[in-house]
Length: 161
Image (cartoon, rainbow, N blue to C red; front, side, top):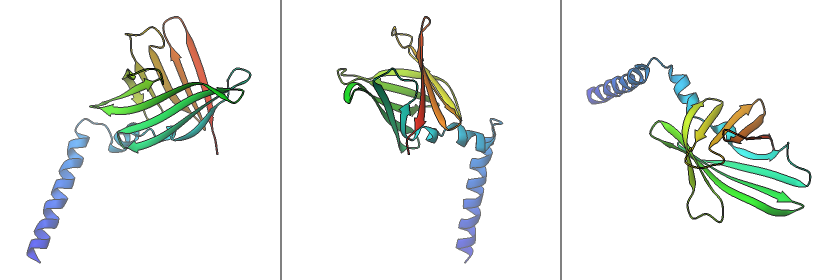
C-alpha cells in the first residue's frame, strides 16, 4: 500500500510540474492546445466562387496531432483538369505547408509565418507565384488565398455533408 501511495504522489508531482512548465511562458494551457489544432480544416469542401463550368474541391484529413493531409482538385465539365496534394506538418514550433502537383517530383514547401486557432499563413519567397498561402475559418465556411505582391486569388469553400 505504501508503494502505491508513493507512486501516486510521484505521478501527481510530475503532472503538476508539466503544467507549471507549460504555464511559464504566460500562455494559458487552453490557448496552447487551441493554437495547435487545425481540425476546422477536416472534411470535404467545395469552392463557392469558382468559374463557370468548373468545380473545385478540397478534402482534409488528420494523420496525427502534428500532421494534416489534403487533396485539392478542379474539374471542368466532369474531367479533372488540376490536382494537388497538400501536407500541413508541424516542424519545431512552426506549421509548414507542402504542396505537390502530379507532374512534380518534389513538393514545394511554404514555411509557416503565422498561425492561431482560426487561421494559418505560410510563405515561400523563392518562387514567383504563389509565394503566400493563407487559410482561415470564416464561421461555417473555409477561406483561402494564394498571392504574391502583384496578385491574389481568393477561395471560399462550403463543407459538404
